[in-house]
Image (cartoon, rainbow, N blue to C red; front, side, top):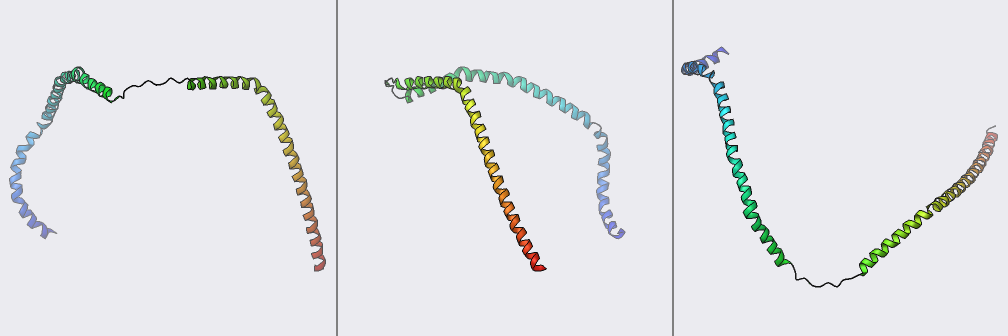
Length: 172
């Protein structure tokens, strides 16, 4: 490993001889860099503030110019274009049927609401009766199905018992 390093060291020594005097000159300057950076930051902030102070009135003036001079011209142009595009007006016959139908529908709706309000008690009672009747009917159906299922189960049990006796008789 040392054999390989010697040729490299011999190549580096002229470079280090040239850099060494520069290092001595740069080192004292390193202490001056941070204050210079702070100064640059302060100057930049001041310049940006000055630019904003100068630009704000210019923008305000531009806004006023657009509002006072350009916007009215654009608005009048658009009004003129709308007037030119609009078709000639024609007299429309006034139809009363739509309004009559609207009021008739409104009257029917009010009458229906009043009838519903008056009859809602009777409707709730009939619903209760219908529900009770349906429940009773469903109960009867369940009892009938249960009785049928019980009969089928008993019949199947009897058949199975008969088969079991028959098989037992053959085995003995």
